Length: 211
Image (cartoon, rainbow, N blue to C red):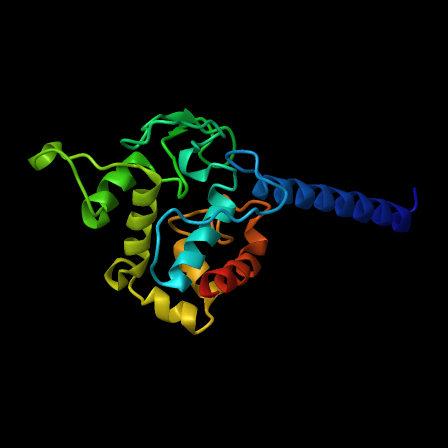
């Protein structure tokens, strides 16, 4: 075989290999902990009132984290629970991604891990039951919303004023900031098919909230 043809063959094989690798990587990033809807049927918040910009952001987080018909009740993997008196705290095996084989307790509209819920509920939950270190916090939809709402509004928690950034139109900056917590927001390790559409979704639901 002439050298020129050998070189051509090697370049062709390499190009095909790189293309297949790229497809594989893209498909990996589109995997999700549970089946996502092909489009986002925006679920209104149960919580009433509040800053419309933060409310729109909360609904945007739902689009990639819990895009199902009953987001407040969903567990990782797509199962749902009816009892939300407390965080469900069910450890379910992770089936894809860098943490495959481990288990996660992610639950609810914002896919709270039990340890994160315990920490943030202690700070932001408006109502607790029990005494001293035996306190518990309801995981009912209203309280899922209120804890996340107060958390997102707290500048000390994030190092920036998120409501101000949103009013200035910096939704991409906010999503990048939050991607360390909600890893499907477009800059994390669990990017999925909804992630690229989140800025557009945010602007759509913001108009609803402002209206």
